[in-house]
Length: 366
Image (cartoon, rainbow, N blue to C red; front, side, top):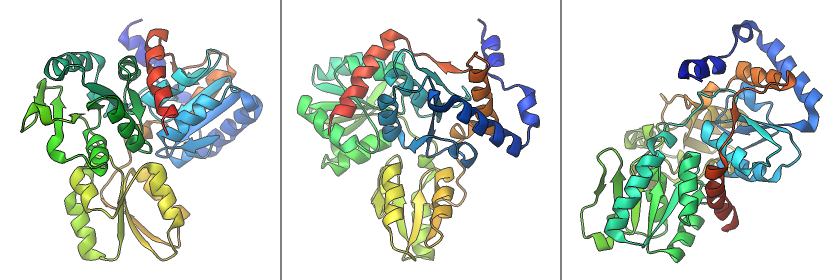
């Protein structure tokens, strides 16, 4: 099939664009009722409210990975998130389950910053430098092929919720770690565990070189030069502005933010951590949140007793997460009813086997 044919198959029919919100919501609910336990809709916290409201389970990437691995009843899993998340669900699902992503254009710019060819080439060059002293770890925000590579080399996946415990475990296995593809989560996690910044190198896949100012034997952490396009937009300037305008406001950020931003914040942690921290905060407390805008707006609406703002007032929602909308969700559900599911995610057994090793290792480590 040509690329044009593939893209045409992924394009939503015009009829869905003419439906009212009320019509779509009613039809989605009708299909949910009709399919019952045969259907399971997963929703990431960054999703729009229009689809988030229909999720049977919501969470961050770790929570959704755990939920996907436990559900064996549903025949169809519709993942309202991005491509790497749907791949993870397919890897953890049973062979009888079908995973759908409502819009195949919902990708992740961070995951795209490391492909398998770059990774294999980098690993060979790093092995030439450091020998058999490295263990690879990859953020779940990565392709199934990267997860498979990490699994086949004895490593594990990590999320922002469990990165610290996985990195601790990794250092019981090898002298060094290679952390893909988000340099900021890797750097912040390692720093919090007491690993000095001057022992962290960066691998640049574009220039194909190791960036490090020091003796190679001092390297403990090799960070892939990748980042989250959303979280990198929170800056030191944003923090200074909050401190000047509202000195008593707490600043809480996601560890995908830069080291400088995390260092100047009051709190840093996973999506789950941010949600729970705000929930447990006293009425009247003030918070500036450095994470995805759909989630920040939802938190603001859920906590009218607190003063909450985005750390960056000009921040936009994650563009790729935002591709999943109500028309695409309805289209996916209609396709199930019609017996011809669209936008199915099918990770090959060869890739799935290696990726499953990395995911299971993550789920095993406490």
